[in-house]
Amino acid sequence: MTETTVHPYPSKDSFDGGDLDCGNGLLLLIRKHIDPLAPGELLEIVSRDSTVGVDLPSWCNLTKNELINVHTEPGLWRFLVSKGPFTPPADAPAPITDVVTTNVDPDIVLQPQKLKKKRKKPQMAITQEVVEPSIPQSLPEPVDAAPILPLSVLSLGSWPRPRWLLSSLHQHLEGRLSAADFEADADDAVQLAVAAQERAGIDVVTDGEQRRDNYASFVGGILQNCQLIPVTDLLPYVDDPEQFNKELQALDVPAGEVRHPAVFGPLGRRDPLTVPEVEFAQSVAQKPVKVSLPGPYLLTRTMWMECISDRAYDDREALAVDIVRILREEVAHLLAQGTSIVQFDEPVLTEVLYGEQGQGGRTFMCGALGERGAQDEELAFAQHLLEQVTQGFPTDRLALHVCRGNWTTDESSALSGGYAPLVPLFRSINVGTLILELCTPRAAELD
Image 1 (cartoon, rainbow, N blue to C red):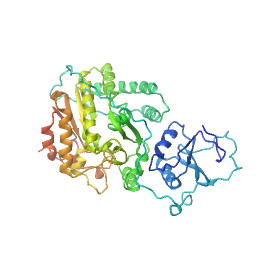
Image 2: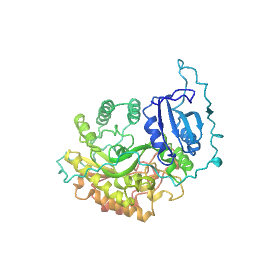
Image 3: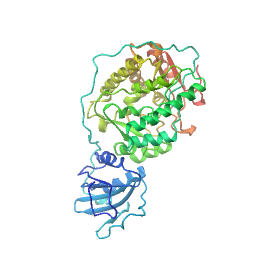
Image 4: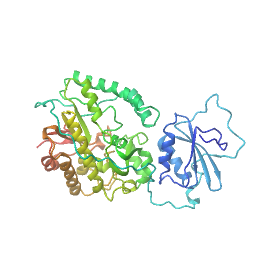
C-alpha cells in the first residue's frame, strides 16, 4: 500500500495509472486493485489523464462504488474511491484537514469543455501476459455411456443456486476467497442440486452449473489469453455506452455483477472447461450425467469485440477457428469421461431471426457486445461452425439447445417466433437430440 496524505481518509491500496484513460485500460487496472478490497475499503487512483475526472464519476455511479475525494496538482489527479458505499469507521482517525482537497462534485470536477486532451477511439490495453496456447497433438476416444431411453426426462442444465454459493462465487471472482474454499462450497451445492433432480425423477441429471458465474461466459476465466471483465468496465468500448446501459437495465441485467470474456491473445485450452463438473457429478449421482457447453456461434459472437479481439485475430472468422478447436477438445475429453450427453447452447440463434439488427433493443446479454451481420449470413455462419464442432462424434451423445434468452421476466420484451427457419440448420448438424424451449406462446407451434 502506498501511503498518501492528500485525502481526508487513508487508502487501503493505491496505484498509478499513468496516462491511461478509462477507454484505454485504466478500468481494468482499477478492477484488479478494487476487487480484492472488502466493502467500504478505499482505493487511491493516481492519473495523469485529464479525461479520467469526467469518466470516473460515471463509472462509480454504474458500479455502485463511491468517489470520496479528488486531489488535483498540475498535470496530476488523485482519486479516492470506496468499494461500495463508504461509512467512516467509528474508530477511524479524524479526517486529514491540513491539505488542500477537492470535494467530489461530478457537475464541476473537470468539465468536458475544459479538457485539453481529445479522446481517441477506445482501444483496450492489454494488461495480461500473452502466453503460448496449448494445442494437443491428439484427442482421446469416447468410452461407452449408459444409453438414454426414448421419452427420458432430461435436466436442461442450470439449477437454482443457494445464496451462500452466490456469495462465495462473487468473493472468489474478486480474489477474496481461495479456489479451494469456493470448490468446497460448490461441491455441497452440486450434491444438493443432483439430489433434488433425482428426487424429482429426472432420468439424466446435471451438476446444475453451480460453479459457473454464467452459463456461457465462464469459459473466459479458464481459457488461456482470456479474462472475465465486469460488463460495466466494457461500456467505454460500445458505440453508445449510456444507451447500452439502459438496455441492460431493461433486461434486468446487473451490469456491475455480470462478467464478460475479453480475448487478448490466441486462445488455448490448457485446463478443461467442464470435465471436472462432470467428474464430481458422476461421483454423487445415481443417474447418467449430461453437461452443457456454450456453442461455437454463441462464443464467437460473445468474444469478438474489435477493441480487444483484433489484437490476436484478424476477424471473427479467425477467432471462430480456435473456438471450434477448443470445443472439440472439450467434447472429446467429456465423451472419454463417459458423459452421456454433451449439449451445445445456442440461444442467440433466435436473436438472429427475431431481434432488431442495428436498432438497439437487445433481447440477449450474450452476444450483445459482439458483431452481427445480415440474417442469412449469420445463420450460414452458425451452421458452418456447428457442423464443424460436431463432425465425427457419436450422434446420440450430442444435443443442441435453442431458446429465446429470457433474461427478463417482462414477457413483452422477450423474443417471439417459431423454429421453422432453423429447420435446415437442425437437419445439417450432427446431433441426436434437440432441446427446444416450447412451453411459452412466444415459441409458436411445431408445424
